[in-house]
Length: 495
Ligand code: ADP
Image: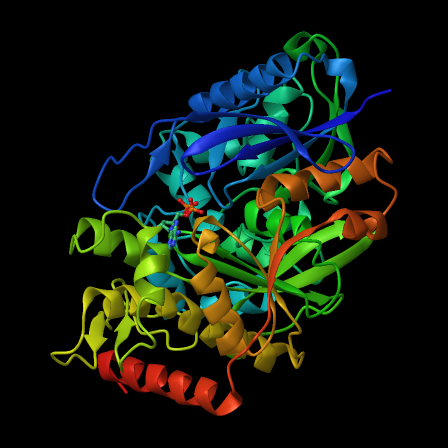
């Protein structure tokens, strides 16, 4: 009997393969970094071939290191950096250009044009997204425009487009399968998330022929098997989800109102809104969380641009700390923030302010302020910004959140987790397995082959490592948060 699920976690800076057992525990991890290509200021590319080879190598390495064979693996689940765009030749399987990475700003001017035409309203209504260079649609349009002969070849049906999940599956199946799942499709800027089909009006406006697009499938079903020569025997591919949606699944946030926040360089917050695609009035994204068992579920998504990055800045820019973990001891060495607020608007402010010209500030400085207060303020800033987004989500969805499940590098900081619980007035829960992205992909794949029975079984398997209960009095919480709002108002470019 096959006792393992293999998750392929194709991220922005590295490819990883993680083997899970039936209890959802990690057996092996293999990881390889790959090249970041910066052809011009603000442009970011990856070599799609390198993504494929590093991903394949990791998978083989994890299998070999665990001393198992392909037949011991019940299914493969794939999760990926979202929105990154590859276009390749169907006949040769060769990309026509480097992959354009989600971070790449090269299509900002296309987005400006669309906004001038008010076409952003059409996009928002259909896709749930804002018109931004971040998403795949304008990247595909750019490739068809700029690569010689590409549009003609696309029209002749010779080219294929895919996000990274699609690209990997194409290669894993020797070119037999050209598919994606609803969660990835919902990040392309080309997919109507309510009707669940490619949007012809948007495709026409961007001059993207429909023949280039993958078939959209659910997030958990057997799409295909891997070519036998890759791992010695074919393995079913049974799960696909974009990284943030996979993390929501890996945190077992299966019910409306359940949410997770990932604290890394920035923060990514997702709230499950169930069968309801909630339109945001606060500027959040509406996205498909996943489709399993014929049922599509939606999520609201909000992000914080600068979270752990502010800690990095204390270390590398100001050089007042030696390492990120040191902030915990510094923060707890003082009894409070001493009135100091750090608004890390290094690249502007996101939800709910949407002010790209705002810049950062540290407010409330007096002679009594030490680096402890500054470190504390930087940690607290992650929590304040998260509360800003949670408030938006609650307003948009009409759902009151009951707890926040957390993961990501900065959640190793207990002070941060406790302060977050205090500030939200709800428990903050840190799971045993913090590799939630890979775990989510594994769960989706496992469900497709009955490795796990249902979401209920998965939810019972998901384990809490530590639960942080709110301890702060309401008055204190409000006083602190009002102080934050006041600090934010000082950095706004327009009020
Ligand atoms: P990413 O995936 O975005 O690279 P990670 O999940 O690896 O991020 O988390 C790294 C981020 O978390 C860094 O920005 C770092 O400053 C921050 N970080 C790591 N450990 C701690 C800690 N103990 N306390 C506070 N911040 C931390």
